Image 1 (cartoon, one colour):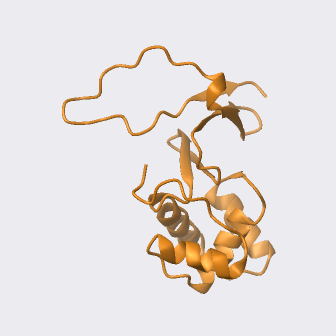
Image 2 (cartoon, rainbow, N blue to C red):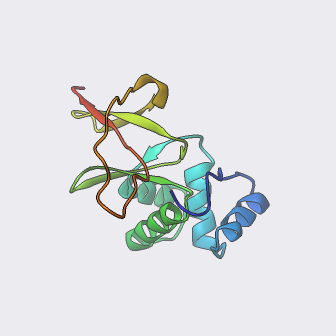
Length: 143
Protein backbone atom coordinates (compact mmCIF):
# COMPACT_ATOMS: atom_id res chain seq x y z
CA UNK A 1 0.00 0.00 0.00
CA UNK A 2 1.28 3.45 -0.78
CA UNK A 3 2.06 5.99 1.88
CA UNK A 4 -0.94 8.03 0.75
CA UNK A 5 -3.21 5.58 2.55
CA UNK A 6 -6.64 4.68 1.31
CA UNK A 7 -7.69 8.09 -0.01
CA UNK A 8 -10.58 7.85 -2.43
CA UNK A 9 -10.49 10.15 -5.44
CA UNK A 10 -13.19 12.79 -5.67
CA UNK A 11 -15.00 13.87 -8.79
CA UNK A 12 -15.61 17.61 -9.13
CA UNK A 13 -12.86 19.54 -10.86
CA UNK A 14 -11.61 21.60 -7.88
CA UNK A 15 -11.74 18.63 -5.51
CA UNK A 16 -10.03 16.40 -8.08
CA UNK A 17 -7.22 18.96 -8.47
CA UNK A 18 -6.89 19.08 -4.67
CA UNK A 19 -6.78 15.27 -4.56
CA UNK A 20 -3.95 15.17 -7.09
CA UNK A 21 -2.04 17.85 -5.17
CA UNK A 22 -2.58 15.95 -1.88
CA UNK A 23 -0.57 13.01 -3.25
CA UNK A 24 2.13 15.25 -4.70
CA UNK A 25 0.93 15.49 -8.30
CA UNK A 26 0.55 18.65 -10.34
CA UNK A 27 -3.00 18.78 -11.77
CA UNK A 28 -1.97 19.24 -15.39
CA UNK A 29 -4.62 19.48 -18.07
CA UNK A 30 -3.90 15.94 -19.30
CA UNK A 31 -3.89 14.43 -15.78
CA UNK A 32 -7.15 16.18 -14.97
CA UNK A 33 -8.78 14.97 -18.18
CA UNK A 34 -7.63 11.38 -17.61
CA UNK A 35 -8.60 11.48 -13.93
CA UNK A 36 -12.07 12.69 -14.89
CA UNK A 37 -12.44 9.78 -17.33
CA UNK A 38 -11.21 7.33 -14.70
CA UNK A 39 -13.01 8.51 -11.59
CA UNK A 40 -16.05 10.30 -12.99
CA UNK A 41 -17.79 7.09 -14.07
CA UNK A 42 -17.92 5.13 -10.82
CA UNK A 43 -15.77 2.12 -10.04
CA UNK A 44 -14.33 0.51 -13.13
CA UNK A 45 -11.59 -1.77 -14.39
CA UNK A 46 -9.87 -0.33 -17.43
CA UNK A 47 -6.86 -1.07 -19.59
CA UNK A 48 -4.54 1.65 -20.81
CA UNK A 49 -5.75 1.06 -24.35
CA UNK A 50 -9.41 1.44 -23.34
CA UNK A 51 -8.67 4.66 -21.45
CA UNK A 52 -6.76 5.94 -24.48
CA UNK A 53 -9.80 5.19 -26.68
CA UNK A 54 -12.09 6.95 -24.19
CA UNK A 55 -9.78 9.95 -24.20
CA UNK A 56 -9.72 10.20 -27.98
CA UNK A 57 -13.51 9.75 -28.17
CA UNK A 58 -14.03 12.67 -25.78
CA UNK A 59 -11.55 14.95 -27.53
CA UNK A 60 -8.68 14.64 -25.05
CA UNK A 61 -5.44 15.13 -26.99
CA UNK A 62 -3.11 12.59 -25.37
CA UNK A 63 -0.70 9.88 -26.48
CA UNK A 64 -0.89 6.24 -25.41
CA UNK A 65 2.47 6.70 -23.67
CA UNK A 66 1.03 9.57 -21.63
CA UNK A 67 -1.94 7.38 -20.67
CA UNK A 68 0.41 4.63 -19.48
CA UNK A 69 2.51 7.15 -17.55
CA UNK A 70 -0.56 8.66 -15.88
CA UNK A 71 -1.96 5.25 -14.93
CA UNK A 72 1.32 4.13 -13.40
CA UNK A 73 1.73 7.45 -11.60
CA UNK A 74 -1.83 7.32 -10.21
CA UNK A 75 -1.16 3.73 -9.10
CA UNK A 76 2.11 4.63 -7.40
CA UNK A 77 0.33 7.43 -5.54
CA UNK A 78 -2.43 5.09 -4.30
CA UNK A 79 -5.26 6.41 -6.47
CA UNK A 80 -5.57 3.18 -8.50
CA UNK A 81 -4.77 -0.51 -8.12
CA UNK A 82 -3.10 -2.38 -10.94
CA UNK A 83 -4.39 -5.91 -11.50
CA UNK A 84 -1.96 -7.92 -13.62
CA UNK A 85 -3.66 -10.78 -15.44
CA UNK A 86 -0.63 -11.98 -17.38
CA UNK A 87 2.50 -10.55 -18.98
CA UNK A 88 0.44 -8.83 -21.69
CA UNK A 89 -2.66 -7.62 -19.83
CA UNK A 90 -3.12 -5.31 -16.86
CA UNK A 91 -6.24 -3.56 -15.64
CA UNK A 92 -6.36 -0.46 -13.52
CA UNK A 93 -9.01 -0.52 -10.82
CA UNK A 94 -10.55 2.66 -9.46
CA UNK A 95 -11.76 0.72 -6.40
CA UNK A 96 -8.74 0.83 -4.11
CA UNK A 97 -10.46 -0.91 -1.20
CA UNK A 98 -9.20 -4.41 -0.41
CA UNK A 99 -11.07 -6.87 -2.63
CA UNK A 100 -10.47 -9.66 -5.16
CA UNK A 101 -11.55 -10.39 -8.74
CA UNK A 102 -13.13 -12.81 -11.15
CA UNK A 103 -11.42 -12.68 -14.54
CA UNK A 104 -13.61 -13.87 -17.43
CA UNK A 105 -11.12 -15.45 -19.83
CA UNK A 106 -13.19 -15.31 -23.02
CA UNK A 107 -14.51 -11.77 -22.69
CA UNK A 108 -11.58 -10.26 -20.78
CA UNK A 109 -13.95 -8.76 -18.21
CA UNK A 110 -12.88 -8.24 -14.62
CA UNK A 111 -15.44 -8.27 -11.79
CA UNK A 112 -15.02 -7.44 -8.12
CA UNK A 113 -15.34 -10.05 -5.38
CA UNK A 114 -15.84 -8.73 -1.85
CA UNK A 115 -12.88 -9.80 0.27
CA UNK A 116 -15.28 -11.34 2.80
CA UNK A 117 -16.16 -13.98 0.16
CA UNK A 118 -12.58 -15.26 -0.12
CA UNK A 119 -11.14 -17.08 2.88
CA UNK A 120 -7.39 -17.64 3.05
CA UNK A 121 -6.54 -19.99 5.88
CA UNK A 122 -2.78 -20.21 5.60
CA UNK A 123 -0.12 -18.06 3.99
CA UNK A 124 3.59 -18.75 3.77
CA UNK A 125 5.91 -16.53 5.76
CA UNK A 126 7.28 -13.60 3.81
CA UNK A 127 11.00 -13.83 2.97
CA UNK A 128 13.38 -12.58 5.65
CA UNK A 129 13.22 -8.84 6.11
CA UNK A 130 10.01 -8.46 4.09
CA UNK A 131 6.33 -8.30 4.92
CA UNK A 132 3.19 -9.02 2.90
CA UNK A 133 1.84 -5.71 1.62
CA UNK A 134 -1.33 -6.97 -0.08
CA UNK A 135 -2.94 -10.16 -1.31
CA UNK A 136 -4.61 -10.15 -4.73
CA UNK A 137 -6.75 -13.13 -5.65
CA UNK A 138 -7.81 -13.43 -9.29
CA UNK A 139 -10.14 -16.33 -10.00
CA UNK A 140 -10.24 -17.18 -13.68
CA UNK A 141 -13.57 -18.36 -15.09
CA UNK A 142 -14.88 -19.26 -18.53
CA UNK A 143 -16.93 -16.57 -20.06
